[in-house]
Amino acid sequence: MNKKQKFIIQGLSGKKILAGRVCINGAKNSALKAMAASILFEGEVILNNIPNTEDIHTMKDILIDLGAKVEWLNDDPSKKTIKINTKNINKTDIDINLATTMRASVVLTGPMLARFGKVSFPAPGGCVIGARPIDLFIEGYKKMGATVTLKNNLYHIEAPRGLQGVEINFNKISVGGTETLMMASTLANGVTILKNCAKEPEIVNVAEWLNVCGANIKGVGTETITIEGNGGELLKCKKEYTAIPDRIEAGSFLILGALSAEKLYIDNCRPDHLEKTIELLREAGVQISIEKKKINSEEDENELNQNKTIVVTNDSARPDFRFKFFNVETYEYPGFPTDLQSPIVTFLTQSEGESTVVEKIFEGRFKYVKDFVAMGADITMIDQNQILIKGPTPLKELVTKELSAHDIRAGFAMVLAALIGKGKFVINSVHLIDRGYEKLEERLGAIGADIKRV
Image 1: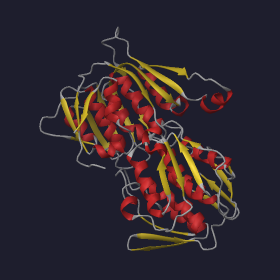
Image 2 (image 1 turned 90 degrees about the vertical axis):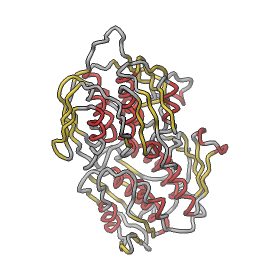
Image 3 (image 1 turned 180 degrees about the horizontal axis):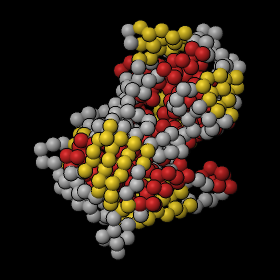
């Protein structure tokens, strides 16, 4: 990870001239959890459609530090397949330096505790977009019979007799809490019932694979998940895992296409995972159509019938057309995703009228707004979780200031703002963007963007 790298982008001055195809990678937030789940298995597992992003490499390094063997098949990350064998894990202390760079590292605690009866870890790190308390994890483990101590900023959790099945009612919906305690419960003694669960497709993706391999998880994708633990017996990989397409990456490129493309094909995506985003953009006047992927066999039908292409078209016969404003609030799935909040704000700066955006998931996720205002956007902070946008406003070059990628998604929003702006833009901290978007400058360059990494 090189924290000194920057993007230099020549803006399109509002012209919609990008064109071509982008292929959506596997979902980072599914792949990371499948990698963590490999600890629950006896022997090796094969994971397919794994994105070559910084977060994936961090998870790989954590697993290797624990004693696992992790390798990209053919030694080529572009092949998108990872083989993991956790048979020889010889420690239960998650590396402090690695864990504090990525919040998703906390999901390792569930599989580690379930298999080895103990684990230690620091407060997880990553993007600075809210406190994201880990109380849900800690209280869940305590209810399942574990003891938790905090010493020198490290959590030490032990369950020498194994985790016990219990009923856990989350006091707030938590993706991390749902998937971590779900994985921990697969090897527990007895039945665990999780209530007020998150419903994200990424959780479903991992749970369905675990079920094929011997887990007994019911109700995933609903508010209540029931897991019948197998008393500590490790799972056996009866089927290779394949990550679903990344809905946040697809949504990011969908918004990019609406603002800057003449015609953009977004391949290998799941429109059914983006229904709220597509609905809002269509209401604003974005021309969106969906093409179904061609299939060759019944097996393809079963596996790929939901992988489609989204086509975004901007009609050159409508040069004076303005997108209509809309209001949006972020919610847990299937609501509008918090990870698309900053890209949609970029879109709304170019829409006609006044829009409000309310952040319901994380506090402090509007840090990027000051950069947008410096570029010329008319955005007012109503409070720390709500903004008012008046548009459209042209975005202009900053002669004496560089833009900053405050987190993964705000970083993409900055790239998007620079692309539609006038002049040349410099964006620093692009290592944060690399955590969630693979080779972004290459993919944007392939569809006509003037962007380079320095």
